[in-house]
Image (cartoon, rainbow, N blue to C red; front, side, top):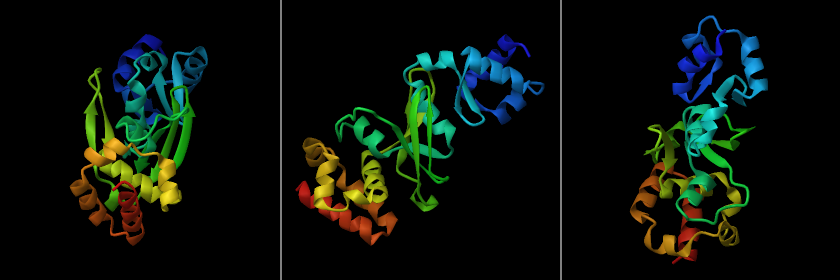
Length: 205
């Protein structure tokens, strides 16, 4: 299998699965894939999913990969809170996403990707963001990221736990859209989450 032909076919996809390789290059050789990974031409993102190492030179590539490795998914939780400057940037930041698939964690050359699972009726509250390379990634709104975090992390159920989250006082006072927050909360139909939200808002009142 010719590498240049393979690259021409697959590079525009960004990251790609074994199934996609079979669609674009029907006569591909699995041994060649293994060899190109060892040579550094390809990086293995997770089992059966790859990207070209040269793509990683684009600093935004890792964001696009988050949504492609597990579908459907959107970036949320602590990554989104950091993106909106709602919490301090951690020393070791992960790409944290929400999905309707099984929870999973993948570590590759681009970073650590963590996926938390929610019910299909809670899969909303995200929007596409355009990247300079023409691709997009899905990111939770600030309000949805906050609710996802409170819902999926019971350690933030108390006021002391909420303090540990270290939310930005200025953002909470002037930028948080409370109408949207309560609109989203109503769709959850979760008394436990409602209690956590009331505790949070009381703390930042």
